[in-house]
Amino acid sequence: MDVSKKLRGTVRIQEAPMTDVKVMGSQESEIAPGVWQHAPGVVTTSLQTALNWGRQNSMWYLTFGLACCAIEMMATGGSRYDFDRFGMVPWPSPRQADLMIVSGTVTEKMAPRVRTLWEQMAEPRYVIAMGACATNGGPYHQGYNVVDGVDKVIPVDVYVPGCPPRPEALLYGVVQLQRKINVAGKQEPEKQKQEKVESEAVKEDV
Amino acid sequence: MSEIEARRLKAEEVGHEKLILNLGPQHPSTHGVLRVITTLEGERITEAEPDIGFLHRNFEKIVEGWTWSQVIPLTDRNDYLANINNEHAYVLAVEKLAGIEVPERAEYIRVIMSELNRIASHLLTFGTFAMDMGAFTPFLYGFRERELLYDIFEKVTGARMMHNYVRLSGVRNDLPDGWDKEVLEFLDRLENDVIPDYYDLLIKNPIFEARSLGVGVLTKEDAIAYGAAGPILRGSGIDWDLRRDMPYSIYDRFDFEVITREEGDHYARFMVRMDEMIESAKIIRQAFEQMPEGPVMGKVPRVLKPEGDIYSAVEGPRGEIGVYLVGDGNFKPYRVKWRAPSFSNLSILPLMAKGQFVADIVLTIGTLDPIFGEVDR
Image (cartoon, rainbow over all chains, first blue to last red; front, top):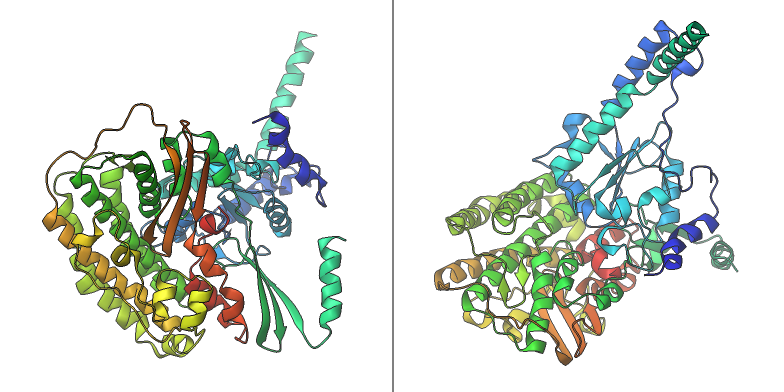
């Protein structure tokens, strides 16, 4: 497989009309905007905690099955593993969904649609790349029509490996995402504090 | 002319009396990534055009660069609800081409696993068909039993879905001790508790009957003309099952019925699937009784370089899974052509949807039960 063919997936998607090309190709996910941006302080931090608590315990996921992993996603939503324990409800419309579980191979024909669906979701929105195909193309990475990972199209928060991942693995991925949501908006004050300490240390040195 | 402009022109042609409605590719009831462009006149569909290819992941091209045995794990992922059946189809073709012999015990294990997989697939179809109808609970019931089957598979193959279990000249490992008892227990449960439960829950329900009886009728002639396969074909009254009519492996040693229904509507196709589960259970019981002791792997030549071409088919849960192989005396296949039953079944959709209510096209897709890993390959 020569490199030009492998890159083609990325290039062609970039040619497709996209409203926001800033995040193209970046693997960094966007951090949910926090209230601290407007007024950092003790009160807003408590508000942020409340918001995060709400967000992490009621993630409605888009019913969006792409391939084989969708069956395991359905199994996770089914009787034994029961996604509902985490407050996760399958939701057919992207407008009200919080989480997109990309469950399967993303092809060049499907990639613009995945992007559109992601754009239709309201912020804060989260993406889980489920399985090897959504992570990096998996067993089909040689294919001329296969996008090597959904992170070429949309930013991803959590990668769940496996082909397909077991429901336990997907649940663990969801728990990781909950942890990520839980610290959103809280890191910034700590970072500022650290910078302050560092700058004071520099002053002392001088 | 871009696709959008073409659609706009088509819309102008169609005029104000008709409406073009786009279903999918992200739609909760399309069973994967299917897009259907429907033209409506009021509530009725005048034209339905399926748009496929959203999951075209180049299976046939990729495997041309792989060795004969490396292909097996990818066949799992073609029809991802009938994994063992797919492996069986491919392995049988290679074995015929290369003249490899299979030990008898391995043949029995393959049959047992294939039939269990057929039950698992029909259980999911039961759940999703009910979900298309608006009933969510049967889906949970279907998955309750599927989880038990996953456990059974996992004890033998180590995986829930993608088994990679059937190997050239046999199967990977023998059955674990006490496994047959578990399977028989499951089958007892299926026949005595689960399926009667399903009748009470769903099939006797007047809403279910109203929405499926006499809806989406497919005549015998159309079924043959469109190359329908599996339960779709047998639901239209055609008595054809590869397991009986062109017996492969050891299927000629079992006594079972081929379920057919004359009506050709949604109800008939649904009931064919329900009854096939019981027939599969029958085959598994017989296989356990007849199964001999012995090795599960035969001898495979170290260098496998078969030459020639071959077509070989098995009866999967959705119909005839056909594999056409061409070997040019190399260690990898020259061509692998996959004849997918879902693909030919999906081609009936425009015919069946024509004249239906728009609410019924969801059920029509559900009853055709296409799997897009297999349609697009």
